[in-house]
Amino acid sequence: MKAIFQVFFLTLVSMVLFSSCSDDDIENGRTRPSGQQTDNQYVNNWVYEKMDSFYLWRDKLPAKENINFDSSPYDFLDGLIYPFNEQTHEGDRFSWIQESYVDLVNSLNGVSSSDLGFDYNVYLKAEGSTEVIYEVLYIKKNTKAEKSGLKRGDIIEKVDNTTVTLDNWSSLLYQNKNSYTFSLVNQSNPITVEVTSNYIENPIYYSNIYTKGSHKIGYLIYNFFSQDKGDGTKSYDTALADEFSNFYSAGITDLILDLRYNPGGYVESSKYIASAIVPNRDISKLYVYYKYNDLIQQAYQENYGEEVFNNYFADKIAISNRTTYPIPKLGDKLNNTLYVLVTRNTMSASELIINGLRPYMNVVLIGQTTIGKNVGSFSFYEPNDSRNKWGLQPICFQTYNSLGKSEYAAGFKPDDGFEVYENMAPLGDTDEMFLATAIAKITGSPLPSAKKNSPDLKPIGSSLNKKGTKGILINPAQFNKLKTTSLKNN
Image (cartoon, rainbow, N blue to C red):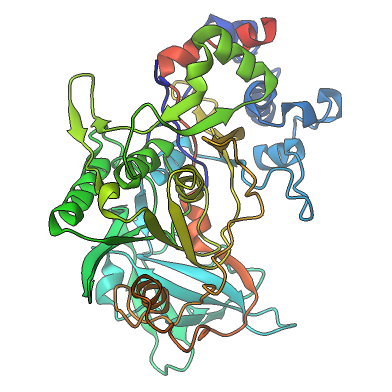
């Protein structure tokens, strides 16, 4: 039996696990106790219940009597999280909570009520300075930003005439305004960008085929793992299958998968991509498997057996119980090698593809060291609870490939000699540094001479983190059998 639940990686993107109100909730004291609990206490009790059942590091939670249940849910969760150790790379960097579960659900599907229309990295302007800059990575398709004149590589130093600093950079572009005016480095005229309302971002950003001598090279930029816009159609998954079918029909010999701006998303989408790329595809072969805390591991195994932890390659996309969509066998064209473009913004389901395919083919990495996210999460929220509108995204499992490998918490490093940096040429242009390096590697041509054109600035953050390092879905019917009370009685 194949695993009956769908998983998606946190990382920041959808289908969402939710728990509905039931008699179990009453037994757990989660119905409103007529003024005996503040709203913070009410929400925090719910947070603690989920963490005490599903959190991967459940055994590291502080004693309940030492926790302040009156604090804000943000501070409360911070007090529960297992601290991350920079030296050992143990601990939790990725669990989060969001005040509106609706916003959480939408963000996992690339849906936004208002969108700037571009993604950016954030850097310290100079050593010892408190000023920072935004560097525009790409302009999103079908946004008002496309017509504003803003372009990839622009450096923003002021927003609405306010200097960007360490104190304001994370909030300055999220002021619920209809437009923002940007002052750019080395440009005298500011640019005004209108916010795009009710924006739906397609994760498939760009594709092309390049013919270089005897090589026909397919190139795909994929910016987050989402199955559809939240309507259950699997429209993004099937569109990806179409892209790979086009590559197959065109007779490509090599594939470059550009995941440099991809913070993660659904594991199921990553499986469909891997299933198209893996050579000699066999749906009895393991793509990845999952490990949970001891409580959940035992409960799943007792209810569903060992197979529930396994995720296998697939030959079709399951759209519904009766409808499927074929996945092409593009991997049979690729000489057993995949080229992946990566940066520090590459994480989660992106890294899962690298780890999941490595037992079956040569995966060449070009770019910069990835973030190192070998764990994933569930999404929890209460749609029928008027008192609790929060969405919780705690780390709940770790992933392993078919060889039992999961040792990439420090990130995947690019192959020797292939650490490259952005030169901010247009994406898809063969002079763009990442793409040019990959093509040179494929064709055996001399590597581009200037490998590092960007300045040595200290990275501070990225808008890609705001996309949400994403979560995991379990079939709600299955989840209802594993309520917290029954888990604790096992």
